[in-house]
Length: 339
Image 1 (cartoon, rainbow, N blue to C red):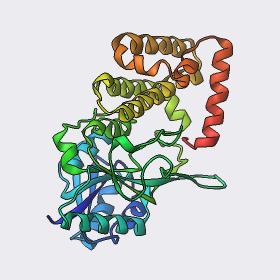
Image 2: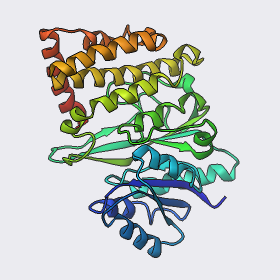
Image 3: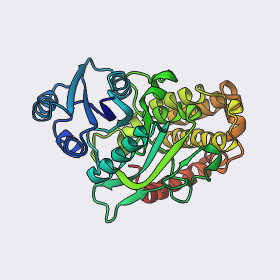
Image 4: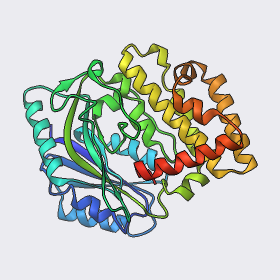
């Protein structure tokens, strides 16, 4: 084996910030494979990536593909990965170089002892423009720290503490063998990247280190509130994709099943709340259609979701409840920094 970890950097017109992402990984560890996946950029992204490829020929590789969206770039990178493990780094974010080096060194030592993990988790930090303090998402009260464990040992995740693309490293072959695919030309598919492989994961390792720095605050980001409201139908598409991936009743591990049902609840809450935030008659009608679809087409999933308070709260309709939802959205935005 040549490389322990592939860090894939999907890029689309990322010339203004991709250098920061690259600088955080190219000198981290000789067993890191950095793959820049250019999703049909029309700016100077390709030139920058090729510059780093010339400077670090044993580390950086450049892959061009026709534009297919973020998820398509993630899957293209997966099938070109040389590392035993696979990590996605968005081009406007960066990794803690020291933490990355430490994790890779540990995984190399484990590999030499013929030990691998299906999932490796680290902390991530919101780097929000204008915020007075940074928000760290860690899992020390939910996951066993720095030892191997299974789904039987996980605790209950709080709101804003879910395992996201920022925090997860998957074993490359697990992603390939489980048949992971992501829809093209669709935003917010990082949720599917994390969610779909979960039942295939047999063992996990958690590093209580701040590994990923999640930059948030650009006006053209997909998580910008204006963009979220414009693209709420894409959130709904991702939610439907998620609900169709697994029947929760078939998930044998109770704690994993509960966690996955919580993830489904969060997606429903986001979709429903964004329609309320949009507030137009058309949006409110689509909100009703969304819940009707969830209750009918995904009745098995809804059976696990309906008892949770977030579903009961965001499913209710009417002027008063919609106002409560808007207030709750504003409070959550201040607490959790999601846009």
